[in-house]
Each structure stands twice: as structure tokens, then as C-alpha cells.
Image 1 (tube, helix red, strand yellow):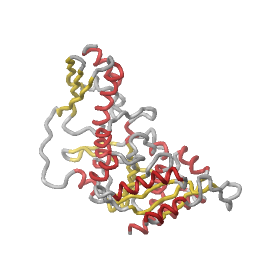
Image 2 (tube, rainbow, N blue to C red):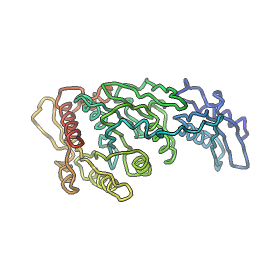
Image 3 (tube, rainbow, N blue to C red):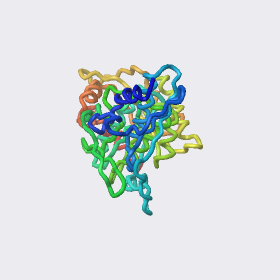
Image 4 (cartoon, helix red, strand yellow):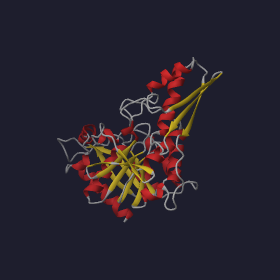
Length: 353
């Protein structure tokens, strides 16, 4: 293993926002040092922080580890080629880009597979249908699904310079402003990030976005109760959370962990309510029938136990899945599934206004 080998390996690290050019041809690899079994790569960034810096750092590490002899340790350093000018007095970036957002709400779940992202996307669209100004930030960093569910997989958000800082312009579709880390990676590309890298990337993705004037900014949070959640709650002025679950006991047990996380004294954020997803199955041929596949009213009991309101019950309807796969959220329709999401949106708006 020598420096030429490493530079060759690093040609596989593409910058998704630069026409898929790799970091070597972009001149970002400032130097490579090898000392025993320790490889140190220095990446150079321009004075304006790259929104994908954490992604590129993580990809650099992963690429070298994958190709280097077993036991090789990798360190990635960064430098700024041109020293950024000192900030002018005034608002910080996070305060400035979020100053016109009235309510920032986390959409969370204690576990994966409960349809949290489906609820988040359709709630955003339903709120927009009710006349509210809405944005959604897809913070589910390891499984971003907003691009697929909104039919925007091939789109790329623009970045503009505003004085001495760079801001990202969210995509707009169905009356909602969307931002996802999925826009900056190929659909089949695995995001191999440790917790701190993921946290930093997500904060940049939310705080560097020109959201403009919004009534609601929904943050589709990753499943679970890890360091990403704690970092987001501490570093983003999140007002509170909506919890999503299914009626089954296994899901509800994990929801308890999510509820307890937000109520922990170190987090201490209100829970605005619980959404029971997949509450029952209704066949299209028999719209008046209900089959409780995952149990009956588990969410109702959970809401009562923790003294939180049940915001809505969303049925299992085949069209929800079909619409998500087609990139056309079910909340756009006037079918029973669309009306269920509109009712949920009305309840959320009523709770916060």
C-alpha cells in the first residue's frame, strides 16, 4: 500500500453535487500520509462549508478501510483553503434560516417499520392542502425515503451564495418544501456514517436551507432513540414531537422508549400526540369492513397510559403503498386514506394553533 494506491482508491469517492466527479479530480485531496498502519488523508474545502462535507469524510474513510490491509487505521483531516471572513454581527445561520418558521415538529417512532415516513410525508401534504405553508426535512439519514415518496429522486436542490455564505434551496412539490440527504446520494448508495458525522450532516442539511416563511417544518427523524435524536433535539429549535406507532404490542413497547426519551429531563420536549398507523385493514371492495391485523386500538391504550392525545388512526389501504411507490402521496386524494390524513392534519393544526 502506497500513496498512489490510496489516490487511486479515492477516485471512487464521488461528489454527488459536482456531476459525480471524484474528490481527486476535484482537487480536494490535499495530501496523503502513511505512517506504519496509520493513513491520514487531508481534504481541502473552500471557505464556504460544503453541505456534504461529513458525507465525503465518511466515504473517504470507508473507501480506504475497504481496500487497505486489515488493521489499517484511517484519519481524515480537513482544511479550509481560503480562510472565511469573520461573521458580521447579526443572526447566526441557524437562527436566520429558521427565523420565519413558526412550528418545528419532529415526527418520531421508537422503531422502524411503522410507517413513520409515510405519515410524515402525507401529513406535510395534507397540511399544505389545508392552506398552511409547510416544509419537511428528511432526517432519516440511513434510510431517506422522501425522494422516492415524492417522485423527486432525479432532482437536485440548488445552492446559492448569499453574501459570504452558501445556502441550499429546498425542492418544492405538492405545495411543500422538501429537503433530504437522499438528494445528494445515489439511490443505491449506502451512507456509511458514524453517529457524529451523521449528526453534523443533518444539522447542516436543516440549518443551511432557505426555508423561508413556514407555518410548519416537519422533521422526519430516524427510528430509535440514539445520539442523532438527542443531537437534533438539542441543536434544532424543535418545539415538540408527534409519535407514530402501529397497534401491535412489539411496536408499542418501543414507542414507550420514544415517549420516555422526549420526556427525559435532558430533552424535555412536549409530545403533541400519537398517530396509530396501520390501525385496521379495509378491503377496497368492502369499504365498511375493518380487519384488525396488528391488534385493536393499541395506540388508544398507549395514549391513555401516557396522558397524550390520539391524533389519528390511519388504516392500511393498498393505495397508500401504491401512491408512495409512485411518488404521489395518498394525501393528495379524496379517497378514505387521503381523508384520514386530512383529518390528522386538522388535528395537528388545531393542537398547535
